[in-house]
Length: 296
Image (cartoon, rainbow, N blue to C red; front, side):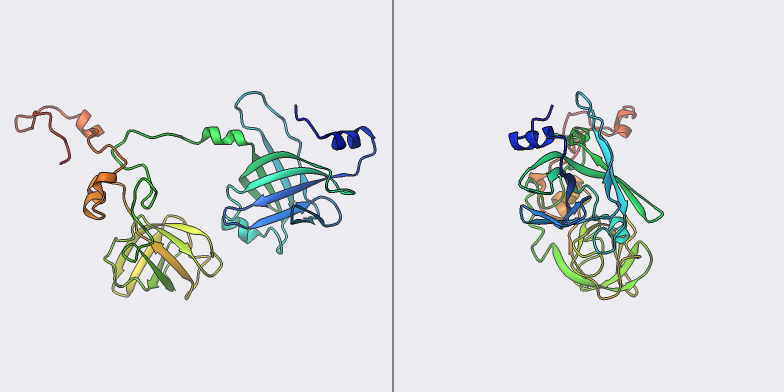
């Protein structure tokens, strides 16, 4: 059971409270937004909590054990605050939501009730419903390492050791033409070989998708220039002259780590683990049975 401060408990005991709910949303791109179901703006900890007409939270059923508690916040889409476009762009994906119960007559009297992350967001008829998942959600995220042939870290991570900010591995470029929902043609990457940025990551620095990241599926040289294609559709949100920073990609294979980056010593996979094809194969007279490594 949550223990409230003495002042807050005494206020609850009066039976005639002046309480409201406040929500602090911290997006993964660094944007911080405050909302309240009160009829005027409240300010505490340097954050303004603006009234959001129609914003309300549902009841929370607390569970014992490691089960994930879920609740919802629902309200009207406001173009100046939470816009449908920002939701579709994924700016609220996995955002942190802090739920407060606040005495609007004295905001110093408040209690932090929950800290959740945003899960699924449903939009319909000008309304949205945002699922709030409790911290137990983190227990559903895989931890530790997998024993697999592929590397289990992203290129540029501390265990990898490659400096992806080096000019050899990153570049600033811009969109020259939107070829489709998944592919764009770009300028500024003419000095890089085809596939250099395949499986890499792109960070938008201008335009509607500014501060967002997209995973690159393919990087190719075409008759018209340089083409980048993505796993997620981006063509609906970008236009010519939008700028970005692109960073080198890696398919997480040992041969790529060794030949492309000369970084085999830091490879974080287990390349000598036999694959399914090896397990299902049968001995042949020309096979090597010396017990030597599968990959030299």
